[in-house]
Length: 109
Image (tube, rainbow, N blue to C red; front, side, top):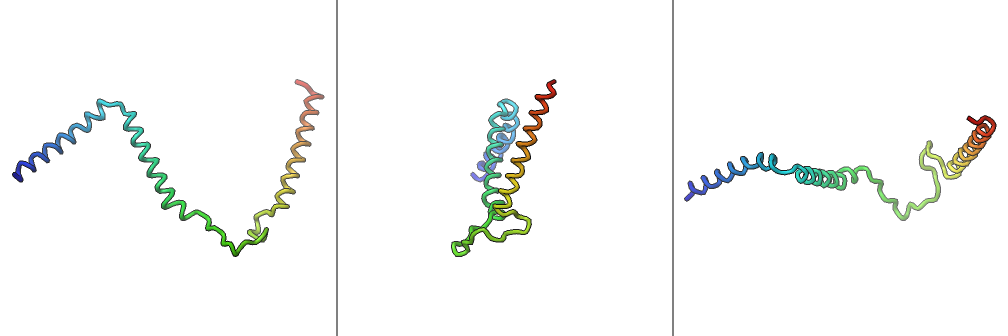
């Protein structure tokens, strides 16, 4: 009885391993590609959620440390400084565009 089961298992394993190349040769690989790509996406999402994101996420600020605009980093601009630079870029850009349009009007071609 044990020998018959072992032979049956061996025959099933041999037929399974022999039919795998036939399966890939006779079927469209579109299904295999979609299955492999889907599994790859699932693994990437799992890695992102469980390994990468916990290391890089910023901890939530405590309710007690609710300070207003304060000193954060010496190279980080404050909101008024940032607004000043944005306004300078806006004015410089509009002057440049006005000069280009004036030049094109005077020198067509």
